[in-house]
Image (tube, rainbow, N blue to C red):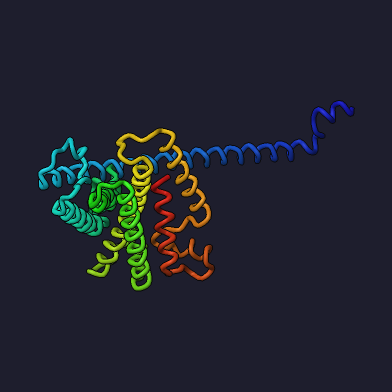
Amino acid sequence: SGTEYRQSPPRALQPVVRASSRGKVHAMGTDKKGLRQLAAETVVAYVRMASTVVIAVVIRLCLDCIGIILTDQEPEEANFWFAHCRKDGLCVVAGIVLFLASLIGCSIFAWSCQDWITDPERNPYARRFSFAIIVEAATWIPISVSVGKTNAIVEWFMDISKDDLVQAMLSSAVAALLTISCAVLTHVAMKYCNDVQRSASVKEAGWSGFGKFILLATLYCLGWAVGWSNWELVLSLMDALEPGRSMHNAMLSAGVISTFLIFSMCFYLRYGPEPIIPDPQLQQVCYNHGYSSSIRRSLVSYVVYSCVVFM
């Protein structure tokens, strides 16, 4: 009857309906399995990144302790962070030397050990422990060190004057000079050095391979250094708006930070993503002819990276 037809399909169509239903159930099961796998991989990636940063910060704290002891600073006055030198030029030099030592030492370790330490055939412990995290942490250590030393350099220049407005102008000059210098260096590196990005994943033998690896690590550090100098610029601007005050008005701080946050978001949405080290596929999408190695592209990449650091 019509009622029976509405309640269930004809017998001839029932196998097809069952097969279709099974297909939908299988597809839904596959989607759920893929979603669970994606969620698990995402959690693992975040845990690995968190572990990498924790290891890098712990070692950076040890290096900061060495710097504080060598420069005879009071740990509490320095906030247990080797990033404040005031008018002490030797302290700034010691910070730069410490950064270069961490950059060279960590690059040597990561470049020379990345093959065998993660290979289960040559390192049996690699079957149970993720030594790749240690290798990745070695590249993050100089980045973490560079932030503190950038802070020390900016403060050293700002302490030339006690006037908050002059300090804001000095901070702006240092941030602009650092941004332009790093952009020019990156432009030269991308123009005359080939396969710099590839050295992060594929080891190239010889001095040439190590040179590319340490150049890549240096460019990573410069990105964070520029980002931190621009953050210091925001802080000095708040000091200039409220001179002579150690604690700023909450409304003023919120207004300044919100303004720069909106600017950073708009700039990133307009010009990002623009990595400091060009990715050929991304640049192909952006420029339709491989990647651009112009100074403008390098300058935009550092401003975009500064926006990411600020946000």
